[in-house]
Image (cartoon, rainbow, N blue to C red; front, side):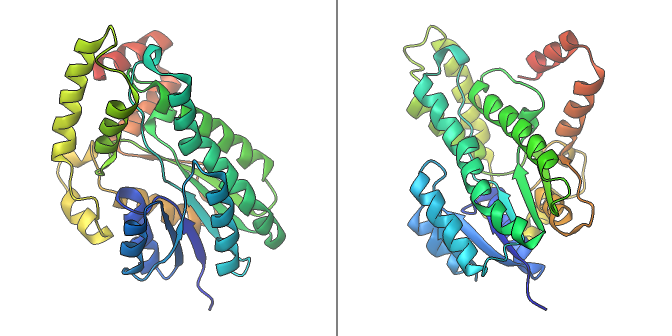
Amino acid sequence: MTARTILITGCSSGIGYTCAIGMQQRGWRVIATARKPDDIAMLKTKGLEVLQLDYTDASSIAACAQQALKLADGKLDAVFNNGAYGQPGLVEDLSVGVLREQFEANFFGWHDLTTRLIPAMRDRGSGRIVQCSSVLGIIAAPYRGAYNASKFALEGLTDTLRLELHGSGIKVSSILPGPIRSRFTLHALNALRDKVDTAGSRHHALYAKRIAELEATAGAEPAPLETPEESRKSTGNGLLPQYRLGPDAVLDCLIHATESANPKPHYHVTYTTRMAALARRLLPDRWQEKLALRSS
């Protein structure tokens, strides 16, 4: 039996890496992507087929889609859009350019890649499109306006795509993680330092506090590469893991989204996301805002 083929983006660390290894272990042919040459070389040592992809570069997206379809002989069974970063900063301090960069990496690039793959899936009458969204695609949080906006946009586009592909044989799902062990906070901290003039902001004291909090969190983050087995072992079975899970929790949802005959439209990963989804449905807007402010 020919192995099913999946394209997974953003595999240099965190969720992408664990999912690439996990799907490979399940017998899938995994085409992984990364931006940097060193990460591409590392992934190749794991027995993965690897392509270069930069979501902010249209030519890179076009080349990746073309090469992935060529490698799969036009029979790509699934794509998991995952590569992204979070841009912190108060909305009033975000330049239009910074906001555009966030959307290029987290939204427009995903759309470009996905629409280049859909025709081949339509021709076959089957396929799975899975988006790695976020709890911040359900509820807003202060200081995360750019990331909130990109994930809210992604949720709307994904839901629409699911409706439009109904009956085509192509299934569309969204995975919405809450706190997951990864290098996400470190990358967010670097984005804040590089792209927001925190010292020149009238809120510089607030930024100093937030940066200290991010530094503490980033310093406690684990090594960026966890196999599914390592991830499950690190998470354990205690009370705390309900708040911060390992990337294997996302892998479990990806497996269901790609292998189940009836994948879910939305997968809420972590206690935080499940509670946010429930609050969104049941609580008045003012109560939701109070909870968001209290937890920020």
